[in-house]
Image (cartoon, rainbow, N blue to C red; front, top):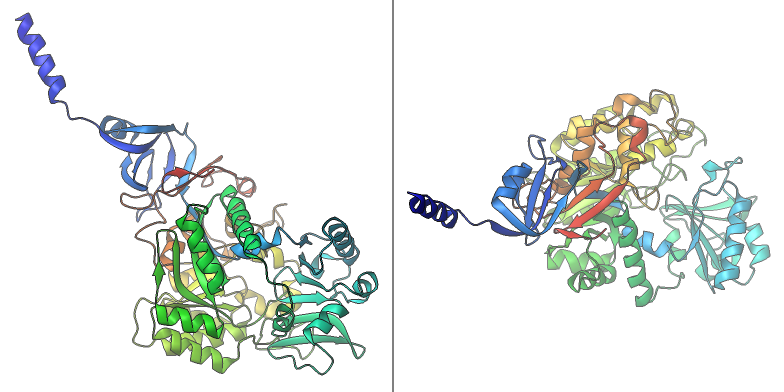
Length: 539
């Protein structure tokens, strides 16, 4: 009998199903899967860069064995975070320029330039990040001080929204800008009959033409710097809103060699040579790069009064803003792009620019299905125009713009237009989904500031009490979807990312706090503890 029992035991051991080998098992976690039912779970397994199982810790440990096992100790895990609208490459380039973000006066701007130049001795000085709305004197600066300090060194400093330059006389001379230069699609600002040095929107291209092109070494370093900062903040995919063919091809080569691991959804800048190349070539899709959209600028920005409004600015008599891309050109572009597989993603801030873009979309997309065209920003709309989003046009918005602009937006717009401004909940209701981003480096990179602004409608000091136009706040579930599955959908990538489900890419972010339940005032301070792309730990 004893021999029989031993024989049975040996047989049972021998017959036990062997565990399946995987690359990574994560257990004891608080996992928000963001699947169709928004289920929570506690464990998942990864093999060959994809999720192969999702369930309880006991279930997965019984079925799988892995060379790498992570006990999350109850930490919160969300799908890899997607920034649906940013300027990734520009962020990297800015690491090598004068940082003017947060300056509190023009004197501080000048001091920053002087300090930078003493250290770097540049032949052409470039900086960005100033915002006159943050200063005690909320007027555009002028070039006289820069002319006096650097009469022979061209200086170009970019406003934080990217829609205005302050340049000195040397830069104006290089660009060939005079009092007689036409200001197509923007403004060449004059004061007392002289050039002030402020250039807004369209004419900025004249200045861009004389800014020295970065070397390939500089471009590579910029992309690596941008990746480092993005991953540090918990991002696994970024949508870069406007890239040249050269930069896109460099990104592809760096991803192919493994020098860059972050995924990039590249919007092609709207220049004839780019359109001719990419629209004829068709969609380009690799594991880490997706090129299938054209970025078009409708108008400028509200902060520099370049956004196009149906009625004049409340704080600037008879001023309506200016279209960067003329109305007829937007319409012809929409028709051209509609005949390809590419998206049209158009920057529109003002209520007039938004309706121009939405009408062009509606006309161009008649009879076409599942095109997922986006309005980037969709910042100010006239009440009847929200209905255009019912045609499955996707609003791609940046919640921190609301909490940055709330101090002065009503001065620009007046009380009557405010209900249609930064109306994220209304946009979500009309469209059925919303994609969320930061617009960095216009705003900070952190997706947790995005989350906080969307949910609380407050700044990091928790102002104002009750939230800014809180009727348009999003729920936490809606916000997480906007940063994951809805952003993925807007990129035609919902079958491969955006949720933690079997078969999808194993991109996920581990947070130091449970962002779905912590008090509102703590959300902005959440950190990404670990970041994985294709199951590989990148932070």
